[in-house]
Image (cartoon, rainbow, N blue to C red; front, side, top):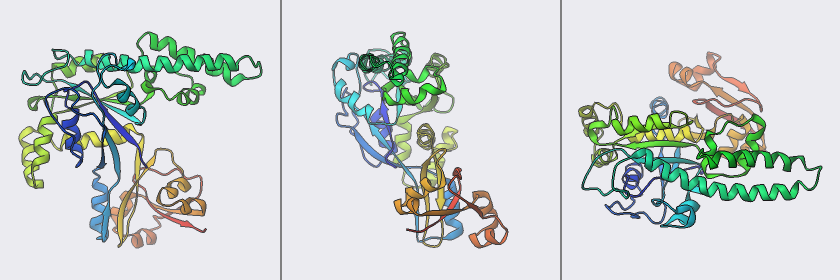
Length: 366
């Protein structure tokens, strides 16, 4: 399931440093704008204690976690929507992602140049918001023109609805409101999705702070939190430079000691990965046994046949049923055989909606 989160932000806010912490694919990191030109793509392992526990029970030959792709995208400047700087490339790259991790600089450091000369995460956020909104305005204007032409056919009710939704979006964009912050009727959502707008993508604001602010944040984070309180967006505080130091440590014990000194219970990148997973509306089911314990990614709301198809298309085509064990039952009873004996294996059909943490075994015939 090739779903991508794009790391975006102004130059020199810590995007590439953060990407380096997340991925074994190392982006160049330096103190000048446009250090990242080609988008770097990293396949990130999603930490999951449940998979570790299943592997302890079954002692399989292989343990395979689930992953998500993170893309480090070139820094954006004012005028990107008109092609300034690396604007056209930035916009093309972000269009290919499914969600946005918007990194904002929330730390003081005279040795690291800010492209606008001062630290103001709210202003920085608005710079990128404005460029994406301007690009969406171009898209919406074209959609309105197309709908107006189609509306000449009086029987084309879909065109009239598309025109109404596009007009509603344009009015909001002109007020500086991103599409994801607009209240739509339930019947309008499919039309909105068909427009493929940049500001409709889910977003998480990643506040890059200094080490001292890693646990509680600081005045910059507080200001940003107030500015986005009416948006449907998550805020995560992380000290990217400190995370880079943690990533360089070789052993688990060394990393834990470092975290304890900072008063943190886990690396910030773990929290970021989990948050990115949620941002993409993803969940995990498991398959486990003596050969392999494996985590599989699926969209929330997926039914059993489609979940089976994630393993192999034949599983979906020939789906008969799914045998489902709840994670807590498996851990408590200690094996599939014990779960079967205790009547804790549910037989589910084509309408079963897979739940996060389900342990699945699919029966199929092709």
